[in-house]
Image 1 (spheres, rainbow, N blue to C red):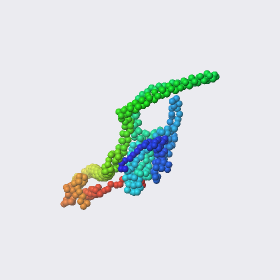
Image 2 (spheres, one colour; image 1 turned 30 degrees about the horizontal axis):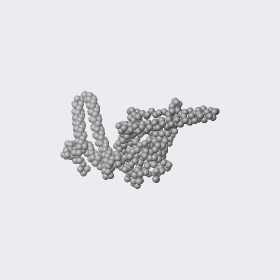
Image 3 (cartoon, helix red, strand yellow; image 1 turned 30 degrees about the vertical axis):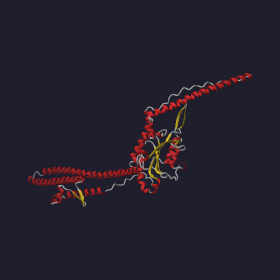
Image 4 (cartoon, rainbow, N blue to C red; image 1 turned 45 degrees about the vertical axis):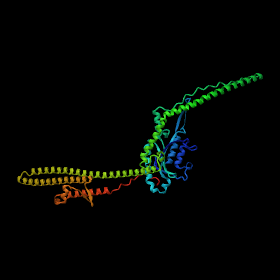
Length: 498
């Protein structure tokens, strides 16, 4: 088996026969006991093993205890034909347990023989099964899940109850039954009506026995007359019965023909079509979220009418597609990591630019403060014009030199930032390459060319250090991107079969 398998069903406390079996009956207690591997319900398993508890709102023992307690506390009001009412417990045939069985193509023997080889794939399948189940279920339910490794194939039992419903109605969790119920509410029934039954003749009343007479002769005559009347009545009744039987037989044959023709004309009942379509959609969605990512086929070879070779090829292709999907997911995560690193670097550059703006603002403030101090000093030295003029010339000269130096530094820093942006763009576009741990670019920015040539002394030492440090960082990031491996995904959900 290399195709997906999911089976959903609801159960009541009252046993019901299993379709296709004469002496096999299932009920909620039996299903819970089989999932828990109670000895009385595990006779069909040659060597029963304790089930492995998986994810759920409750353990299987807690689930059984809570469902039994809630059932015991449910009462319903029954109204009789005469209008009287009384209270009783929930009907025994009310569906209160919802179940799902998910089977994996891996046999239990194969898994137990080499658990390390199959644990990852089985764990991925189990996690997806439970995630898909929780996505499909409404709020307010309780559920438990167990893994069995003692039958032909590895399989999972999921047991759920509609805790939020006052009658624990499990049918409201069943995809097909929910769709059918909605259709019945919104549409008129298309059930075929039988032909009107024939009017059957009524039997005459049976002759009454005469009153006893004290006269034996009279009594004897009365009994003889009554016997004749009864015989006549019985003969009339027999004739009427024969006529009625003939009418009934004729009606039955005609009604059978009528029903068959009406069914052919109508086709399957609309509610049945809705039910089947809902179940097909369940299987399709299950294939999308569980089967396909796990390398399982949607349908088996018998239903698909495939040969053994075609089926083997399709299984191989499904495994390949699942492997490729997993690789694409890993590549996507690696790309996300690289993009996050580039965004971090861009944020660093933006922070450096912001810092530069702040420094420029601080410089303007300092310059303004220096001008104010200069004006104050001029005012205090107006008495001696020569000294003031000389002092002013000295200060103006120094200020001009300082401003020129600062302008040169600003221009140099701006050119350095633009050069780093050009280097970063060359790395992104692929024009740059790393050779023997060094960055090679076809056309270096001017400031970098000056650093490497005769104009090295024209570039200040901090700018040279900044550009060299940025270049080394670009080389390291590029090498890390090329050599990095995707981190292993850690999943805190319980592993299967461990």
